[in-house]
Length: 126
Image 1 (tube, rainbow, N blue to C red):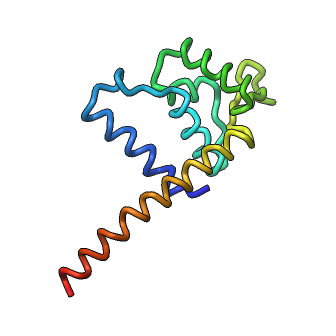
Image 2: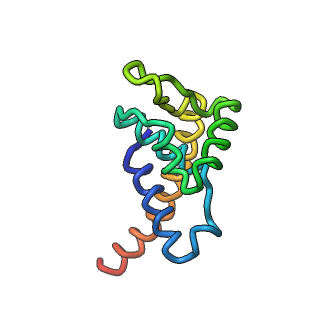
Image 3: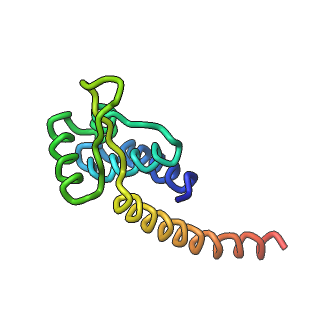
């Protein structure tokens, strides 16, 4: 999975919310999947509470979505071996595969859109 494309997707989500109120755009499952995918690529463990923050919704709502995501095989939870009060969550192999597929399709679309723009810019300057 390409970290640069994931970074762009996360940045675009933030940019989108600057123009349209975030309450109208919230997508907690996608927010958590992007965040967990990025964390996995970077080798960072994510606590359940951190994943809830990334969701952009109240913690109880995020926890409900995490349970649904876990039931559908998109994420996995595991206990912190050093602190029994804390639980970590990570994107599952299946969840990572779905995000990877989306990222690659998004990258292809962005590249396809950029090629005609490059060609017209080159033609004008040449």
